[in-house]
Image 1: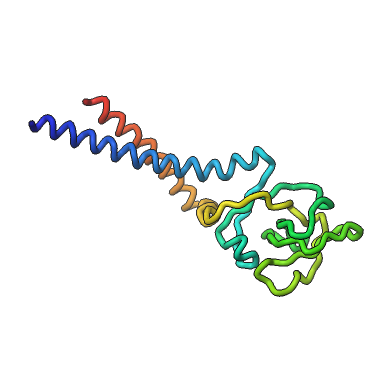
Image 2: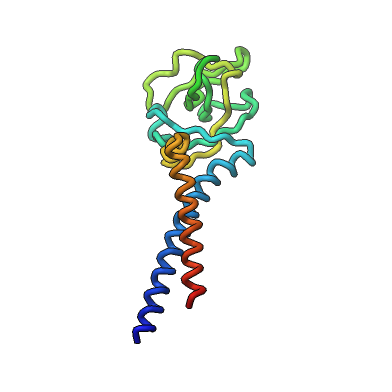
Length: 173
């Protein structure tokens, strides 16, 4: 009878370890995939850090931007760009007007009352937003820090270790 309880207990521990291993490995796979897979399709991820495009884009969303011919962008398209040649942080706003003659855009954040003051020359444009993933940007911003990278690697290793331990429990039976 004791042996049967011990086997059931061992099986339960093995299942719990396997469950958490799958959760951790799945999480790390999703995060890694959200960075790598879009790049295969020539899309670069950018994290939304302001509320200027709410409710369409929220702080913490990730937008995937593809470089395309700016002359094809139309009113209503959402684009990412730099405000000037020295800017380090991209802005993501909606095209209000594409001036083909001047080769510049008039843009506006959806949450803003007025259009952006400065027209955006084509050469400052990163590209058109193709799709977004809500909330994941906060995780990606954290992963840019040293602490975030260490925790990410530790989560992955913990998942691998749990998977191995669950396999060992299954072999002992």
